[in-house]
Image 1 (spheres, rainbow, N blue to C red):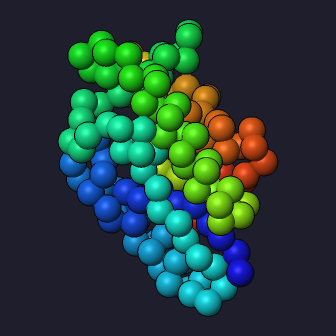
Image 2: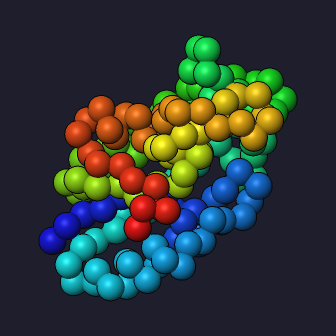
Image 3: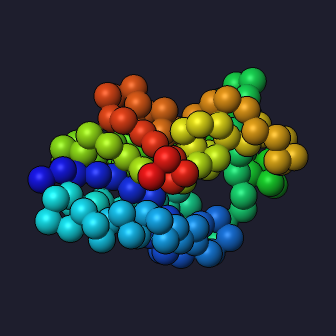
Length: 145
């Protein structure tokens, strides 16, 4: 049986920064098609790191990799803790694949916002995607399903 880590917001869980979700029907259909072949383990690294829902939007500053919210508060520690806890879940179940929310400062794997809150995307990874990749877990975004 395969074990796959997945962003909870993509599964319809209301854990997004604004209190909503990023429900992705294509992912849900894939999960349904994999019943009996794979188990999915939902995580929200930002909640796991201690941030509330809703919360202020955050982005990673390109120059120093700090995570700041729209009030200018440094929330790097919460994002890094969430990444570590998501990695623990992946290790506990032996996940070799993670399907994560694109552009997220936690889960983004093929580009994230640049830290200026101007919607500019740069070629970088979110804190969780970066850690999982460094530990040998394949990370893909929801558009790659």
